Image (cartoon, rainbow, N blue to C red; front, side, top):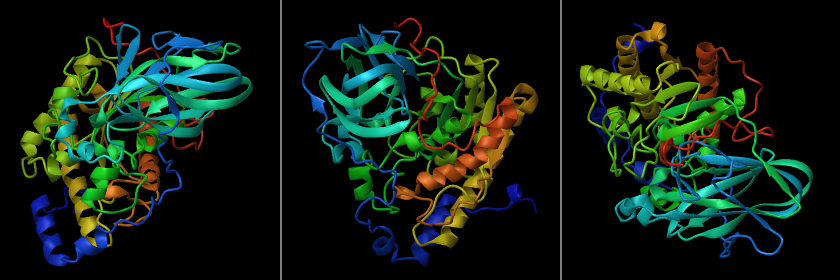
Length: 460
């Protein structure tokens, strides 16, 4: 029997089997080790801000709307402020040093739902709306906790003579709040210009693309998840960021935890991707009049619809729902290739110390998502219509419940994300004809990828 056609149990059966198999799971699997297990973890900093606004002395203030700051992702402009909340939304600029300090003036607007979501109510950083991560010439410098109210955050310092690319990225999920960037403060002796644009992909996904808890310990401790989800998440280290680094391109990450293409798996303040794909910002209902251009759209959804969204066993309904999403993307991107991914039988989900159970769940994700993705892509015209259904085969294989590949709440950690990206890179190359530029991984590189201006049409 072909692997794609093998029988798999329902999520309910898997959960019942877990209770029967391992009543001691709570004690062993929910134990959180002291400290995060990944070397890539950067402790969020809360002491790198000042309450000053604008420029003082000989400093120069550059508004967020200035063309010298090249934004990547979806955003909207209100007066001279740029607002965004999708993960990995970012901006870049080139500074000619020397420069003692480079500051970004920004703040957050906390969502109305923050008192309803556990990861917001119990956040280790009360009142925080986002984590922003800075890079200088591709090297990560710091992650800072951004709060409500305008303040200036130190993102780079002691730059030597010559050109330096400054990259600032939102590395947390939408649920904590909206980022409001006012501008950049640099010394008077510096010149500033925009970085050059690059190709861009759009990744439409769920937690398997955001990798929440990916720099945290491998544990199912829900209390730790709610408290440390912001701290232990770095969306800049997701599998899609590794794909971007491989091709020296950029991304729009249209994704959040719990979301399905037609049925969500947890309480979030909006409907499934069918309802929010066209939004400017995930926290707001305003929709785009036209989408920012991309060179490839990647859809990686279906895990939540199957595992807790109620779509298990409803294959025809799921296929029709997935095709509606393809049709929505195609209606707004008439000539863009659409790559629809589904995992192989050893990719998604894991339980600590439960390899057999993990492999059963991983197979369940594979079998069900494969049926839905392939069925919907076929209805949408398949390869001839530039709608490609492809299976991701990581090399080397992702483990079944091992610490080496999974972080908090069984999502891929950094190594797991790298492995998953290894299975996506050849698929991107196949459908686009692009050639990988090397083996670079994780986050912006020495020549950071940038893309066209993505101001929402009609809002600038």
